[in-house]
Each structure stands twice: as structure tokens, then as C-alpha cells.
Image (tube, rainbow, N blue to C red; front, top):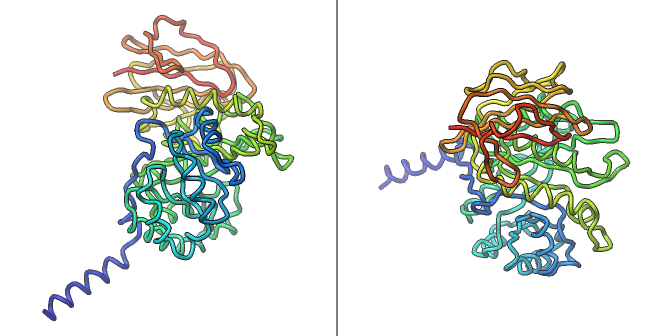
Length: 392
């Protein structure tokens, strides 16, 4: 018996010092066959009603996280979601110090999608967040634990690391959530941030190396005198670039104050986001579960941290444009292969020429497909928009 006790104690001791990524949560899509689309800073607690959540759903969202100040507001929020098609990421201050009772309270509720940990932590926060993530996962292994990381333009000294890649990798190792989420807002009044695609490159590669998906953002909020009112072109540029790199979830900052004003009325951004979300859901069979083979760029100059297109998968022989350049993503999903071309601008229409052999189909934005030879080899692609081709 003493030998058995010593053996068990040794096993427990070894498990306790294992890196947290070895016991990371297994990712499961919280919305089944739909593409996850999360509304950040969702409906305000004082405005919570089922009608408001149905309005959120109408705009294409199936996940919500609100600024709940206490447990009672969280309860009201998740109750109002019932029957609307929107699930909640549980978040309330009471979870911080003692998460287990809160998790047990919501873990059997069908409107629970997961549990919110922290927005934009530095590495000094990782030990405490990793401990809390493991406590939540041990209590409820079926729902995800959510954390959002800083972008590349955050100062490294504030993150507490020497490189951004180190920051992302350490979040995987030390916190161990089942997926990576980060924010990056590339559209500014000064133009596009030069490190946007480098951020996508780093996060997507760390995610692939650690065998987990990632979620990425689009900015819907005009604010700070630095981020302009979103446009159709700017929203599509962000969403389609995220998808080209393999994002398995989309997030918008914010919903309230952006799509719906503080007066409770819809803004013009509501319809723009609704439009692009409709396309994403129509294309869910294409993107959901996709595995990226490569992402390359064309143009006289390509973004920092990216790779130039040098080869194409068969049956494609040439991809060119008459403008600044394209994102060229090759990915697979099941037994099908795809080539996605994104206009890498928010203000230039580009004539894109695609040469290929037989057996290629075009995937339209309503999810339908048609023989690619039915179309001209040269097509005009609006700023931020995309073309998608499929073959076996």
C-alpha cells in the first residue's frame, strides 16, 4: 500500500509540472455546422431582451459577449438568448476569484458557448490565467475557455516578451485554451497597417504548429479619431483575409455602439456587417474545417512577413492582377481543394486573370458552384472582395 501511495504521488507530481499545452482543451465548434461569429461588447445589460438578441441574430451573429457587471446581469443575458439562435460567452466578475461555482451554474444551459477569461493579457498574467483556465476546463470540459490576445502593434515591453511569436506561443503553453484568438484592426485614417498580414502569418503558423484553430477580428467601430467609419470594402478586406489564412471563427468589435447606436437604433454598419456575415454562412461548408496548404501574395511589393507566390497547385497555371496584388490561399476541406484570391486593397478594383486546366469550378458567394469555364479568365474584383475556385 505504501508503495502504491508513493507511485500515485509521483504520478501526480509529474502531471503537475507538465506544460499546460499537453492538457489543453480539445476545440469543438460551439455552433455546430454554422460558422462561429462573435459579437463583442454586445447588447447592454439595460437593453437585454429576446427581441434584441433576435436582431443580433438577424445580422448574422450566433455568439455574444456583453459587458455584464455582475452575476445577476449574466443570468438575465443568458435567459434572454433562449430560442434566438444566439449563445453566450459567460462573463461576470464573480468568475475571476472563484470560477467553479459559476461554471457549474451555467454548464448545463444550452445557451452557454464558453467562458471568458481576459482581454489582451501580458505574459505576467499567464500563470493566473492558466490556473483559472484549467479550473474551468476541469469543471466543464465541454465548453471552450476564451481569451483574446494583443496584436503585433502592441509594444513588446508591455507584452513582456522579445518577439510577438513568443507571446502567442507562450499563451498556448501556459494557458492552454483550445484555440487562439487575437485582435488586429488594420484599417486606419492613415491607411492600412503594414503589419496586418504579418500578424496573420504568425498566429496562423503558431496555431497550425500546435494543432489548434484560431479566431480573428474585424473592426466595426469608428472611434478614437484614428479608426474610420467601416465600409463594405474594409469589412470584406478583413473578413476575407482572415478566412484566407484559415480562421475558424470571426469576431467583431463592437456590436453595441457600432452596428446599433447607443440610442438603440441600427446604424448603416448593421447592414454592411449583415451582408458579409450572410456570405460567410453561405460559404461555411467551404471554410469550416478547412486546412490551409499555403498562403502567398502577388504584386510588385508584398506585405512584411509574407511570402511571394512562386508556384500554383495543379490545375492552375497562372494568377495575375493589374493592381497592387492579391492574397492567394490554397486550402483543402474534405476531399476538395480550393484556391481563394483576395483583393489586397480597400480602394482599388483589380482585373484578375486566372488560367487553369479542366475540372475547376467557381464557388459563388451564395454557396453555389458553376463550371469556371463558363466565365471569362479575367474578372474584375472589387476592393477587399474575393474569388474562390474548387477542384478535386
